[in-house]
Image (cartoon, rainbow, N blue to C red; front, side, top):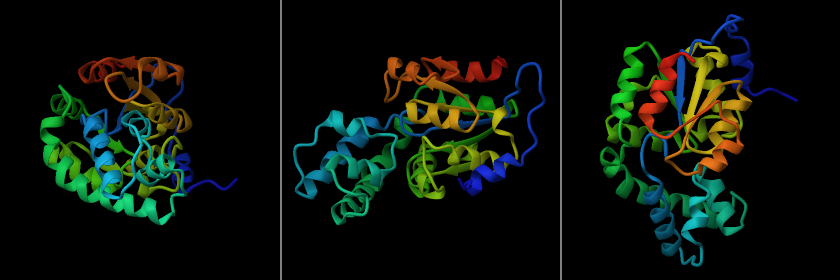
Amino acid sequence: MTQSPEIAEAAQLPAAPGGGAVTTRLVLFDLDGTLIDTPNAIVNTFTDTFASLGIHGITADAIRSTIGRPLAEAFAHLVGLPTTAAQVEAAVERYQVLYRERIVPQARTLLYSGVAEGLARLGSNGMILGVATSKFTASAEALLAAAGIRDHFDMVVGADAVTQPKPAPDAGLLIAAELGHHPSRAVMVGDTTHDVFMAHNANMRSIAVTYGIHTPAQLEAARPTWMEQTFPAAVDRILSGD
């Protein structure tokens, strides 16, 4: 099977030294439900998108279950059509308009408690930070900038920047390759099993945070390296060197 460019490039990085604890140098974060409390706003925006297109009967729980997947894939799943269907493309286009109008302006007030301080603390301790998200890269950049935290990150990778989005390893491996850190020195922080499985597939450790989309039971079943209940606790875990 042919390797993606991200996997091939990451494989050329020097391996972490064997023996003893692995020193974390690169920390990757999911965005929605991990850094910014957007899930309810996303559900509402999906609902309004469907209504504007005359699509009814899709529940909030069904929408919520798709958060963490690429936008076209989520809409396609919910309406039972291919991602290339005209109705799906129209939904994606309408959602992006509503997203820019409604969610981006709220970003600063939607930051989870301790996120801004925690990112600053990681940076001051020499950590390199990145974002691996299922959003389009431009949408992620806009949200991070509006929230006032974009400058903490060396790289932001969305689903449109890789061959295969999460849970495939491509986004994590691309960031590791571009920033020059072996995946074994990286940790992925996220609130869904997609994030945990991406970490597994990329040979990274993972911290599952339990305040976002997926339940503690769902996250535990994915076997993250660690589980934490708050963002500050995740930062403590990263800096502890365990």
